[in-house]
Image 1 (cartoon, rainbow, N blue to C red):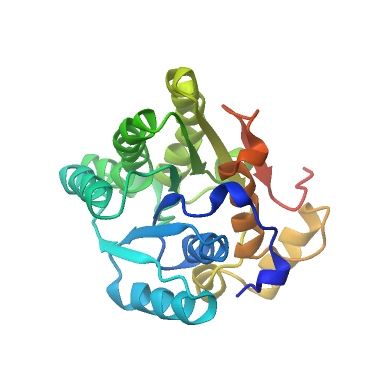
Image 2 (cartoon, rainbow, N blue to C red):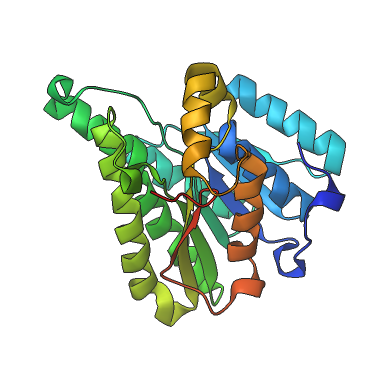
Length: 259
């Protein structure tokens, strides 16, 4: 976890309503924490009630800023839209949207069915669009806003064993540029933060071995593993007015991968 001393403070983020998808674990929970440090009005969506309660307890005790949690299955588009609209009524219109939720489930190409393909697209890209569509209506009412999408370096690296995930994540880059074009006239900025291999609990539990770690560090210019807070800090910048001239861009944070 982070301390206030470790994090830049952006005055433009104070009291802004920030919506974060997938905020109960991984990079998402770090994003929630960093916006709590900024004293934003932090709202997050997830389906894991137990982990969400832990995120709420931690941030309310450490920063005296209790994030607000809504249980929402993001693959249920109607519920997603209804939940965001309820947030607008209950908390206030969303000024900042962080599309973070994703699921990098491994799978073999020959095992993919039509149903599985649709499920993976729903889990990893569809909700990005509909969250942006719904929140942008609120942002237009407020004279502007910011959207930050979370991509992945996996498709750039040509990583195998998860073709549905890498396809969806490559689409996040295209969606970012298209949304930026559509929404720019309303003073809504849209950017994409592209993480490299970030040491979330899921990654550490499932895939980090000494051999894999060695291979990863050989590719990186920075000879250390990357942490979730390093992505969260970048997102703060792109959500804040300090990046006011930036839109339609994809920014890679991968430790300097050199092939």
